[in-house]
Image (cartoon, rainbow over all chains, first blue to last red):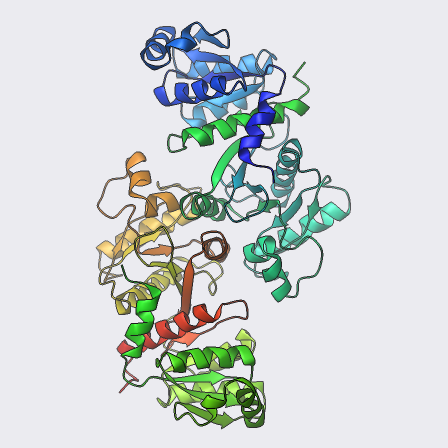
Amino acid sequence: MTTLASIVEKAAMQNDPIVAVASAADMEVLTAVYEAVTNEIASFVLFDDEGKIHHLLSQNFQELLSNEKIKIHHTENLTESAVEAVKSVSSGQAHVLMKGNIPTSVLLKEVLNGEYGLRTGKILSHVAVFEVPNYDRLLFVTDAAMNIAPDLDAKAQIVRNAVSTAHVCGVDEPIVAPLAAVETVNPAMAPTIDAASLVVMNQRGQISGCIIDGPLALDNAISIEAARQKGIAGSSAGKADVLVVPNIEAGNILYKSLVYFAEAKVGAVIQGASAPIVLTSRSDSAESKLYSLALAILSTSKNPSRT
Amino acid sequence: MTTLASIVEKAAMQNDPIVAVASAADMEVLTAVYEAVTNEIASFVLFDDEGKIHHLLSQNFQELLSNEKIKIHHTENLTESAVEAVKSVSSGQAHVLMKGNIPTSVLLKEVLNGEYGLRTGKILSHVAVFEVPNYDRLLFVTDAAMNIAPDLDAKAQIVRNAVSTAHVCGVDEPIVAPLAAVETVNPAMAPTIDAASLVVMNQRGQISGCIIDGPLALDNAISIEAARQKGIAGSSAGKADVLVVPNIEAGNILYKSLVYFAEAKVGAVIQGASAPIVLTSRSDSAESKLYSLALAILSTSKNPSRT
């Protein structure tokens, strides 16, 4: 089975990816940078007050001060660090954008800038990749953090973003389960109707590179035995690679449940911009931040801005 | 810590509760009956074709045929078994209603009958009680199965139903966390607004017997460390007894995630009618059905129809 550790190994085989970090003068952010450099998965350009970064590195990570994988780009304030980090990615100098110690909204405003941002016309969506102790494959969950209540059109893009993430992780034709509370189409339950539409969009080639089977309740999506008991036919039920949640609450609850109750490992990436974006938060473990960077780096391999 | 096994022990100390089973001629249903009788938690009246029940009992549970805890009430068809089982509860002859091999909708139609049903004016809601391997208390989750997209008024009743369930399980002043994707009030996220209203309804005495603290994301609700990292003050954050999910999809996904990924044990009961109702499904384990019966039996202790 593909593990998140193997994703890190794959990322280390990429050809010199460069990560631009907006507002990097923060010990937790620099710890993530240190882990990534130690695992040889990327080089970094750190955007922030140069003196502050020097001070923090000299405290804990002296070896990074003279490491050729680290460049520092001085910026005066949060907005400037966001603008410059985004510009370094849109100009092709860097290949991944990473959020440092800066509010997500400040960074995303620059990402969406029409002149120098990373817009592609697609929506941005969050793809989390879990390694769950008692599941036999990586589990991609989307969208647990970005889109609040996506409509069908948004869900189709969310699926495409997740499918391309699965592809770079080596899952060639992922099984995608749009989740609902039941496995039948029920006019009183909107997620079941969206699920039916996604299935047909897949059959008509509007969403490709995957097999979409839904609506499914979570148990029917991930347990062959549960699917069998419900009498759900088809070779895909019970074997989902990608779980598409109906709304941000369901996604957030599933995400936290997997991390806190099922002791799953996780990495996550924002897809849909012209380059992958890493939005780690303070509560993420160092391991989780490394997985997120690795996922983003792997996602650049199909990015035309890489040379 | 209170366990689901201790709920079964408590149920066994109740004074002769009687469970009416609608459409009982089914081996899985009779297995649940057998487990309950073996654990001495209840007597049963089985509504269905008498010959069929006799045949099934004589195959696997011969000792039940002459057991004084089992009575058989012959009915000709599904509807009659539902009507008669409901009537036996509304008349006070039985104290708990249990769904056998009958569609939920057929049974609930009779439950809601204005003449002989179990209506109280309150809404019915589903309360699931989990024993999660790495959580230090029972976790009540509501509503994962009955109300699709409850409004604020429905959520208030859902909370009251869960709080009274917690009380009978020995949790005197449960901490109730209305879940959302974030822990702040956000006008773009309806569950955060409902959560704020539930908090104030609790402060104003409109919902009593509990402490309501929300909105909370799942991690802030169940991890003191996660709440601390988010800077959430208050003695209740991170220690939730009751999780109120914003919609049926979030609840169903949380329920299944706990059972399948976190290997939690679970029992569940429908509250809000004049007697507790057990709606187990084919995919529930025998153990889970026993826990559900025990929860329902404990819930009758505050029911005025018990003498």
